[in-house]
Image 1 (tube, rainbow, N blue to C red):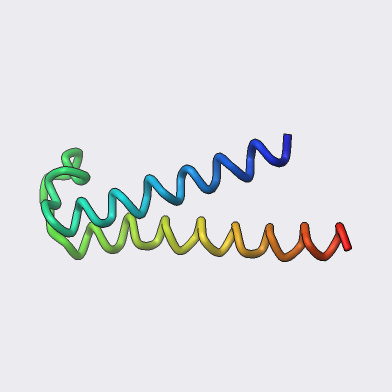
Image 2: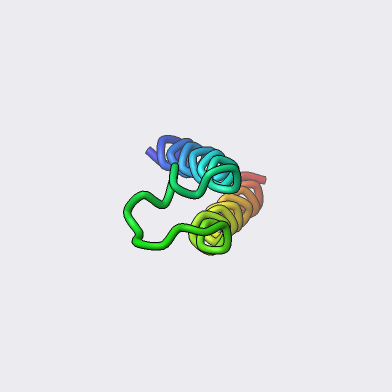
Length: 69
């Protein structure tokens, strides 16, 4: 069960990074739900999401390696 959650977090990280890259090219692709679309908002939304997911995954990996050793 934990492995499935780990893979889900990796999948969400990949989607977030791909959305970040697509939004830097054309912000309307990923910010269609906002009234104003610019690259700074793309960086704020998807960049923060990517950093948060990446930090969760690194913490998870560190603690899983710590407890399995």
